[in-house]
Image 1: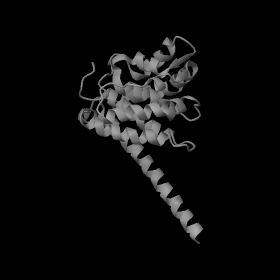
Image 2: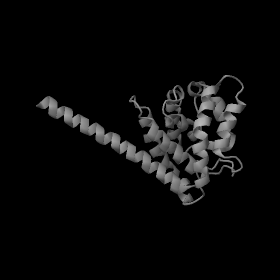
Image 3: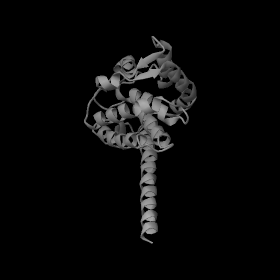
Image 4: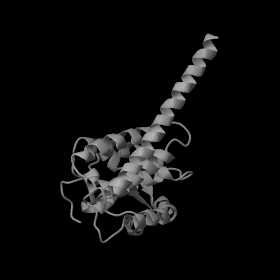
Length: 211
């Protein structure tokens, strides 16, 4: 499926699943470390969908150290580009030069691959208008919020929004509007929970200090 202007996920090649491409990234690495720029270059025409997925997956896995801290800012940056209507992802040199251990990519593939394959089997083109322009810009707004949530310096705050971004990314790749919508609902519920908990804590502190 060649990339077209109908949506940010249209660059996915139908002949290779995302789980297979993730395995090949680690296999094709030229050294023990690779940069985010190298990873982006390997994805070629696959555009936003797969790159978002590669950035989001490390944030989904508890106790996978190192990569989430490296990819959180690029994830926010790429999500902003979707909001702005850019058709292919771009990273400035400062982000392209961030390095990732190939062993971490292999660990990511081994741990996330089986779940990706299950989701890919369930996913299919449906409600595809939800993955195309101009709705893809609205999706970008949600992704921007989820990415900002991942960057919060709180323990275990990256897992749920990371899963939400990954699900949305697969939905974009597969033209599965239902899956994309589910990912947005999941991420929005998490943001709402954080806001509610934050407001509750502030209220309790005010009552305590005021008393």
